[in-house]
Image 1: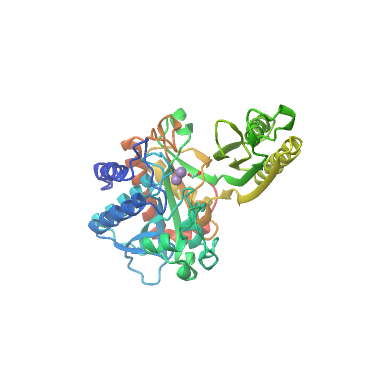
Image 2: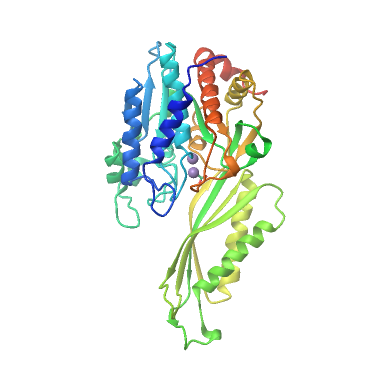
Length: 423
Ligand code: GLV
Ligand code: MN
Ligand code: MN
C-alpha cells in the first residue's frame, strides 16, 4: 500500500518544535501558560496554514486543523495529542502525536483524497501537569469533565488567573459550555509508547486497549519549627524526618504483593523553612499511584493514606491530605483498535495490544467518543526526560497507519463502529 507520507517533513517538524522551550538546565520545558507554550502553538498554527488546513482555537484553547469533508452533515474524525511538555522533558511526548496526525491529514489532502467527514488534527491544551495543577485541561474542558464556569476565579500558586492564561492562547472559560464532543464521530491519539515494551519486543508500533487509572493526593506534614542544636531528640517534631518515613512507606507498600501492575511516585517536595540549623516544621509533597485495576488503585490509595496517618501521627506530626485526582482506568474502543490493527497488518506489521501506563487526553475523549491509540516504539523506554527518542522510520510508519485508518473510518464509519470487537 502506498501513501504520500513525507518522513522528512514529519521529522523536520519534530526537530523544529523541539527547539521551542529548550531549558538551559536540560531538555524542553514548555508547560501550559508559558511563553514557550505560546510559541509552540504559533509554530503549529503556521504549519497548519502552510498545509492548507483550516485553523481554529476552541474555548478550551484546543487547536484544530480541519480538512473539510464533502458531507455537510457528517461528524468529524479527529486525530491528535498535545504540544506542552513536562519540565526538562523530551521532544516526542505529545508533539510527535500531533505532528504524525498533521502529516497523515496533510498527506490525504496532497493526495487529493476527498473525504466524506471533516478530518481534524487536534492539539489539546495543557495535557501535562502545569502550575495550575490541572493536567489534561483541554480534553477535560472539551468533554465537560471540568466546567469552565467553575474555574473562572481559579489561580495558580503565584496568583496567576487560569482565565487570563487561557485567553492568552485564544480560549475563554466562560464559553466552554459551547464545546460539544458529540460533533466528533471517532478519535485516535498517536503517541510514543514511553515504556520499553516495544523496544524489547523489537516492534515499531502497538495498539492500545486501555489507559491506566491515576490517583493523586497533595500531602502536608506539619511538625514544629525549633532550634537544630538545642532541641533534644525526644522533643523534636521534625517534618522532614517524617517525610523520609513517608517515602520508605510508599516503597514498602509497592513492594508488597499486588496482583496487578501498580506504581507510585512522590514528587513536588517543598520543605519549610529549609535551613541548615532549624528543625523543619512543614513538608508538602504529592503522592501518585497508577494501576489499570481501579479496585487495586483504590485499595493502594487507602492503604497509603492509613500508613501516613497511623505511622506519622505517632511521631507528633499532623497529616493533612487533599485529593487532587482519582481517575479510573479507561478502556478504548475495540472497533477502533481493530481498524488500527488491520491498518498496521496491511503495512506488514503485527502490532501487539498493550495497556498504556501513561495518562493521555484520550482517557477523557473516550468517555464521550469511540477512541483509540496507536503507540510508537520509544527507544530504551525513556520518557519525561531529555533522552526521549523514537526512530524516524517508526514515526513515518505510524503516520502511514493513521493515514490508512482515516480512510477506513471515513468510508465505513457506521460499519466499523457497529462491528466492534474481535481483533
Ligand atoms: C502524562 O504524561 C502522564 O502520564 O503523566
Ligand atoms: Mn507526558
Ligand atoms: Mn503525552
